[in-house]
Length: 318
Image 1 (tube, rainbow, N blue to C red):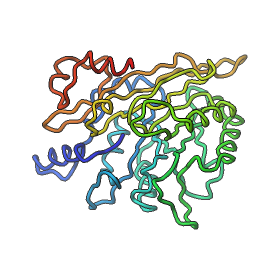
Image 2 (cartoon, helix red, strand yellow):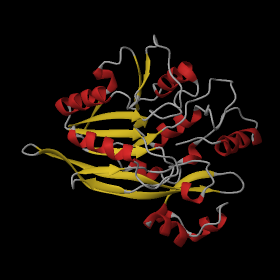
Image 3 (cartoon, rainbow, N blue to C red):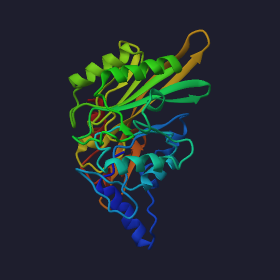
């Protein structure tokens, strides 16, 4: 989820039209909420930090997004918010603390990739139990756009800079959980080809016993595979919802899989799929996500970009 100006302009204009100070961002997920509700655990990448109360929102290159998006994400049914992205220090240390505090207001919502305290491994790895299965969740970004926290900061954004620490995280996960899922912000923007860095880290994750990898950052879909026939790797899910106006950037994906468990063989992942998602954008300003299978010709005709259903499916098949 990346909050470009068009998204918050639509929400603020709606609020202004009824003379309200409350901005409602439920429209972002209202057409896909039914699918989110079907999952025992649902996760989303929140790429941008939130603005302070009363401060203006900002878009590229240094984002400050509406905190109301967190309420919409929690209301839509997302349990896991992955926050290790290249933009996570756009609002500095205050913005990082704001992210932790904002999501802390919602029961049952866990934040990944950012933490406060001494960043012990127990803080770096979130273990969540679902239906008796322990799932370790970790989140990393390739970098922070050249920004850094002060040396004495107790706040942390998880990066791939320290491979030894990443391996320590995954060893802890392997020992204390039944399944490990890695969220990772990597790759090259707008490139559909998998980068050498993605391939390198995929091998590291596989060596460390990771069970699934969910990638983001390129803003376009990249391939999905079972690495060595075992580990589902979603190299890039593209954009779930964004204001980007390149045709290839309105197409995204939802990773879906089942975690099975039996007392003889332990846990394993099955039924791994990639479900295509499209950001619907109208000239009047609405931005909202649909599963591509639910998207029809009437909606396509209203899209502000020159698209058609066959064209979007061809993009997905590529």
